[in-house]
Amino acid sequence: MSSQLGQLFRISTFGESHGGGVGVVIDGCPPLIELSEADLQVELDRRRPGQSEVTTPRNEADQCEILSGTFEGKTLGSPIAILVRNKDHRPDAYSEMAEKYRPSHADYTYDAKYGTRNWQGGGRSSARETIGRVAAAAIAKKVLAHFYPQLETLAWVKSIQEIQANVDPLTVSAQTIESNIVRTGDPRVAETMIERIKNIRSEGNSVGGIIECVVRGCPPGLGEPVFDRLEADLAKGMLSLPATKGFEIGSGFEGTLLKGSEHNDHFYMEDQRVRTRTNRSGGVQGGISNGEAISFRVAFKPTATIMSSQPTVSKERQETELKGRGRHDACVLPRAVPMVEAMANLVLCDHLLRHRAFCSGCED
Image 1 (cartoon, rainbow, N blue to C red):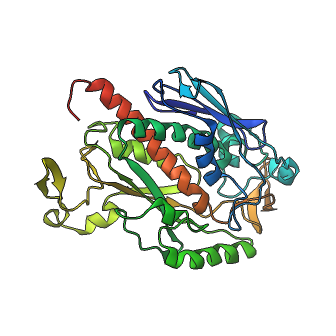
Image 2: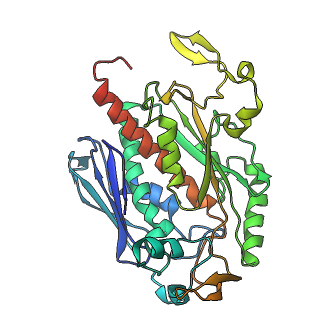
Image 3: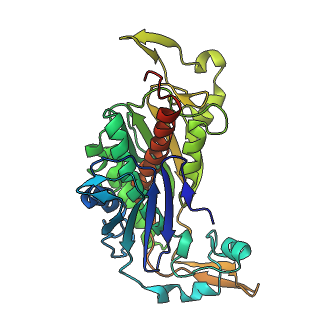
């Protein structure tokens, strides 16, 4: 079971939804980076359940423990182990799912591949696994800030169903995004989105949408030109998140409607720096960052577990029905915003260290 990501900044997550705990081991973090549990907790609090009326009511504080890899408030360069203990266990709510497969969930495919699974809350396939990613990314964010203080990664809810936010990726702020519980960058549609989620939840149903992300201040030169293209690694990172179904960068699919003369980003010089007048490439050309803002979008499907009866099949291959139980998000997007930022920072940190190792004599 692949649970690793990265080449130089490597992470390995562990744990199940209703096991003793979840966490991550990070290898390859440079030494002497200032780091405390408080640095990690800021990001984990944005991801944790029970934080608002539109998220799952599971009551978890998600308090992190740094078990190794730091001394006197700084990283040692050795592996960093982080643990978050599960506290609010309610495995009985999932007992029926031990015998029946939840539609569009990982229950059947896990059985088909491994011949066993932890059915309590989805086990390893639960979004609770992303705690390790978010904790590791908080460290990646510190490493990125150490080398490139101007780099900033921000994500926000762009849409929920047909409700669209109007956000300028170049000016949106973290304060604006965090000012509403749905985490959209457009406060004018926040209440409409919130009401949609609440109404859908009252029906025992779920909704999906799109998260948009921008990386501002990224230097040119990150990424590889063939298999490890920056946009390819970003896509892999985003599509490894639970409930994701699509990724596009820059102009994305809409770019197919344009001619080359309309789509090309023309170069010009500004203060001894190569710039582009448009950014339909989304900040990446030939698999390598060009110094413009990296802009991409991630599609999230409606939450698979819903509180209404659906046709399904049992482990004994008998057709039956299953009604969801337990505590689930009616819409994953508000809590997925920090997850998208996390995956972007993990990918960027790994490519930053790879670039510095390979091009140590190159000018930035």
